[in-house]
Structure formats: C-alpha cells, structure tokens
Length: 441
Image 1 (tube, one colour):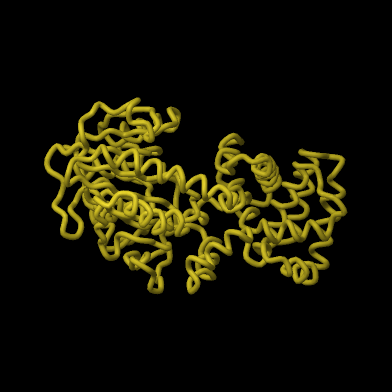
Image 2: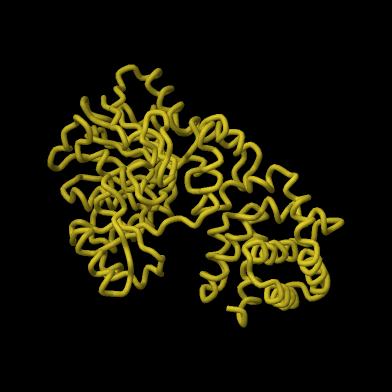
C-alpha cells in the first residue's frame, strides 16, 4: 500500500475538503477516482472518526487554519498516524501528496506531521482536554445520548467508532440463508447467521467487494444491515398477535429509496401489490435498479408522501411502511460524517417532517390496516417520543408492541435492558441503531 499511499491520501484529501464544505462524504468519495475508491474511503473515514482529535491537534500546531486542501490532507495523514500506521511512511507519503495538491505547502505539511511525531503524547494530552476530542462526537450529540440513554451512552459512542458489520440478506425466493452460506464457503468466504429475528441474514467476516459475492448480479443476495431486515417481517408476517397480510395485499413503501426494504417485502411476499414512493426521482431510480437486479416488480412514483392528493388513487392500503427521514444517528459507524454534518436544530425540523408524514399517511389505511414507523435513529425525539405524540393525536391508532422487534434497537451486540425493547438483543453482532413502532388502525 505504501507505494500508492500518496495517491490515496490525495484522493482522500479531495473528498475531505468537499466534506468540510458541507458535502456528504459518500458523495464526495463517489466523485473521485474509482480505482482508488476503497483505499481513499478507508483513509477519509479514519480521518472523520478522529475529527475531534485532528481539529484540536491542528489548533495547537498551526497559528491559523491551512487552506482547504492542505487542511484536509493533514487530517487524512493525522488519521492514519492516530490509527497506528508507520509514521515515517505516512509522513513521506503525505509530503508526496502535498506536492501533487499544493506544492508550495509541502514543507509545512512535513513540519506539522514531524512535530506531531516528536510531541505526540503532549499534544494529544492537551487535545483531549476538549470534550469533542475525547468523545469524537459533537457536544450536543453526546448530551442527547446522555439524556436518552444514561446507562448506555458511553458504549454507544464507542460503538460508533467501529467498522460496521457486513450483513447480507439472502433472497429467499432463490434459496435459503443456510444454502447460501454453503455457497460462500465454497467460494472461500466465511459467514455466520445474523440472528433468530433475521432468518434471511448472514454476516460476512471479513467483508469483501459485492462483485465477489456468488450470485449477486443474479439477485441471489443483497447487502442490508440486520436491524433493517426486521421491517419486512414486522409489517407483513403477522408479528405478535397480528395475522399475516392477506394474499394480494396493497402495500405502500412511503419513503422507499434506496429500495432495500422494498425488495425485502417482495422477496418475502411476491404477491403484494406494492407502491414504492419517494420524493427524490434520482433516488427512486435506484429502487428500480435494485428491483430489476432481483427480478421483482413494484409500482414506482416520485412524489411527496405528505401530499396524498397529488399521487394517491383513493384505494386504501392494507399496510404502510414509513421509513422516515431522520438524523441517521443510528448509522454513524457506517457514515461517520453524519455526526459532524448534522446540527441539533435539524432534529426539530426532522421531527416535524416525521409527524407530517404520519398524519398524512394514516388516513390512507383500511380499517384494521397497519403502519410501521421506522427511523435509523438513536434519539428518543425521533423514536419513542414521536410515536407517543402520534398516538396522542390519533387515539384510534393502537400501538402493537412486539417484544424484541419494536422499540429502540441500539446497535449493540449485547445490549443492557432498554425501554420498550430488547434493544439489539436479537443479534449476535452489532447492527445499525433503529427504532420501530407498529400501529394498527
């Protein structure tokens, strides 16, 4: 890796500079050289996971902030040094990258990184006086977790610094998870069952590119986190005392993109009459691409779910899946930039949108119909508090708890007791943080 490290550092720096300007890190990386994508992503993610420490260190070592690309390169290099990579290699390769990006600043890059090497312990000790450097999360984020999860917040912060599990969902229309696991073994890949509540799920250890997964292009398997795999069975299989949806049931996936849950619904029940809705036409095309790969069919409509008059044909639905826009605080290990791009003021705006969606979609259900509200969030404002507020506004909405399924899933492999849920206890590996509430009309 050392021979090409300067190229990866340069690519990561370009992405980090775009991210610093407010762009999603995933989008910024996608705009770069695809031949360096995996390596540059690893470097960029490491830098963002260490953003609190990197910021505090650079404040100490520089009188003023460096130009955007140079600042980003320093963060990329510091992230590697903090991760334990060989200092002489990182420094020399970072200087080479600087000569490509900002030749006049290569001497400064060399001096800053060498100073960190000489004074590492003292500089880090000073940096860790800052709370954001200690926690590697914004202060408001930490306060929210402390309020919502007073016993679990340190574990949640630590978990968000880990690489996410590489979870697969086997297309049950084409074979069982057990049979696909054997195919993986024959291909030299190791996997284990995800857990009893996700019978279609496997965890690949270690991860590999999707192109190496047997039958991926043919639609035999998809990548989907374990917690996300609970949505389809919760909605259609009759969890708890509910009956399964009737044959040919009419189902709405109200915020469908990128289509993982849409596909899972149809894999389990190909007979469903399913409408996949999303406000973003470009993202909706990804749903269509996913369904095409898997050999599945659904109606696709680009529209705002909050405005049924613009898209609804007047025929009531048996079931609605509302995977609502949220802070994405539950997927911070998968998208480490989320914690820094999000602002605390965003939560009130998102909560308002979630409430508008719930209120707009609820009347579209048949009597006896069900609505599954989901967010990939750890925050109570987007989970249990949102669900409680909805039932106060809509007394006819009956909450249908399913222990271990509904409530908050914190994304921890062995999670302490949490309100209203065995949060994450179903999984033998960490999963994304999720919240589910099932309402019956």
